[in-house]
Length: 118
Image (cartoon, rainbow, N blue to C red; front, top):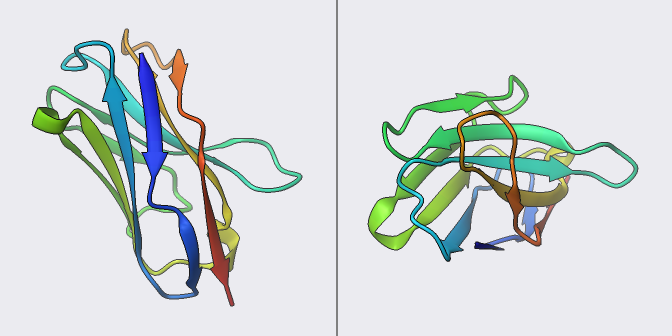
């Protein structure tokens, strides 16, 4: 299983950015996909989650109302739409796969840097 994130970059506060996570190697129809982030000197933080089959989403309070996770089953790709970005959203963003819907993420991408300037 391989997960590849893309779409990171440098933006200004208030801007939007969309990250993509392309999955390959397995059938992901029954998986849950999560997004996480890690800022310098901080622990990795849960951002949100989506289940492939029902499209159910769940978000951390820190991003609720600003970030949206969606998926394209045909492309095996999950997206993280980030609006109204803040400097505190600056981090490396990772996608991860939970194949057993257990809350344990087994497969991880390499991460993509998002930097939000004030």
